[in-house]
Length: 480
Ligand SMILES: Cc1cc2nc3c(=O)[nH]c(=O)nc-3n(C[C@H](O)[C@H](O)[C@H](O)COP(=O)(O)OP(=O)(O)OC[C@H]3O[C@@H](n4cnc5c(N)ncnc54)[C@H](O)[C@@H]3O)c2cc1C
Image 1 (tube, rainbow, N blue to C red):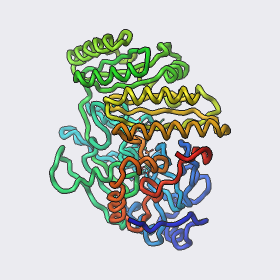
Image 2 (image 1 turned 60 degrees about the horizontal axis):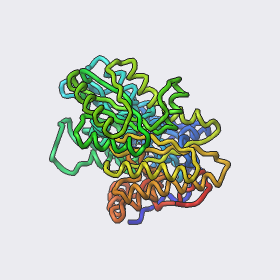
Image 3 (image 1 turned 90 degrees about the vertical axis):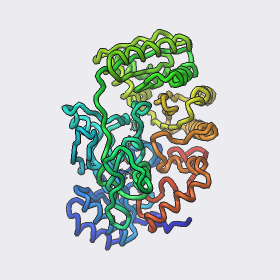
Image 4 (image 1 turned 45 degrees about the vertical axis):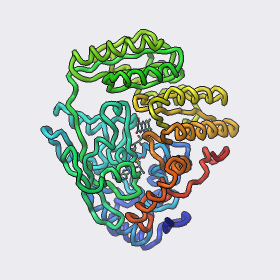
């Protein structure tokens, strides 16, 4: 299926489009270079590609009108939440405008008995947490960045709790979306399940702003557990740690979180948080429930660790200890950057069937050593999902070529193992080549859906489904 493309990046917005946007949005349409640059991808290895202007939206009618103007003049429109996505999702390779949704940040409705909340798309996960504080409920999806809920739905984000509570896919009950023609639709209901019609909610979750722009989300909430127990254990090898995860899942241990950190990552956390954890492959674990339940789960897990060759599993229900541990895990990305000053981090994210986790992580470790790279591994391993954060000297083209080799091998290995080239970071610009391999002929069906919903290809063009360009780290190195 061929799309009409907005074409190569021209040097500016069509004058009629700029006039119409200025007329409708006044001061909330900005074209200053500094504002445009802060809306280009900054947290990634992909070079920033700034939009020509930024519209700040306050209500759904603003989104509708921005889309109508952009549609009239075939101007690309890129939704922007917090800009924390890692694969170039908010870049503007074809120019156009960025639609900043961060000011649409209100909680619209909290239904305590039905355990759901309705929010605007620019509300951050932290702000939602704070709003729920006295409700006895919580929202479990917790990516390690200050992301917006609209951005999280659009990248189908997850985090440390996904092994028990699921990802944005499972926790988004309904959406309100503005389509490319300016029509506003509602998908889903407030019911916990439904067999009615196509599941449009799941179509828009993970669409990275290529099919419509989310103006409201109905999200599932959970009661705060009565008791939480957590702890950590270390292993001689990363493969043993990964194998312990498989055994725990097979024995149906009720894990709420299980995170893997390799020794380099533990060293970074120690330095950053002034801790003294053993610098060895480590699992951080947490159990939720009542006191009896968490004690039983912790004890069963301890036995699996010991029989799997792990060292003592110390666990506690003490909140201060647990908070310290999880804060260290949460800050791992920054801790690793701090340990390698002057270097740039490139994260790659894969997810495999759980029985292949140990092989995949082990092979990643072997490849990292062979290539001589500084590349800690960290992962939400209860789902078979892990990340390699490669710390690079961007002036060193030989090192960049090695990083590209590692990324290519890892992504292709995950796909060959029956897994995916991205468990949670999404496709954006960076993973298009691997997504094409992963989906094969199904890409044509995705393109047909895109064409039906966005025939002029104005919604975040050049992402996810566009013909894959060679992935060149920092514009250098080899293609994958
Ligand atoms: C340190 C760090 C740790 C991270 N850890 C995790 C993690 O544990 N798990 C995880 O899943 N991710 C993680 N991420 C990645 C990132 O936080 C997620 O991708 C997040 O979901 C992006 O949200 P955002 O608000 O920043 O979206 P943005 O980056 O602003 O946008 C992401 C995509 O969604 C689209 N979009 C945004 N809002 C809307 C909307 N309302 N309607 C339609 N499309 C929209 C954008 O056009 C873009 O394509 C991490 C990132 C960092 C920097």
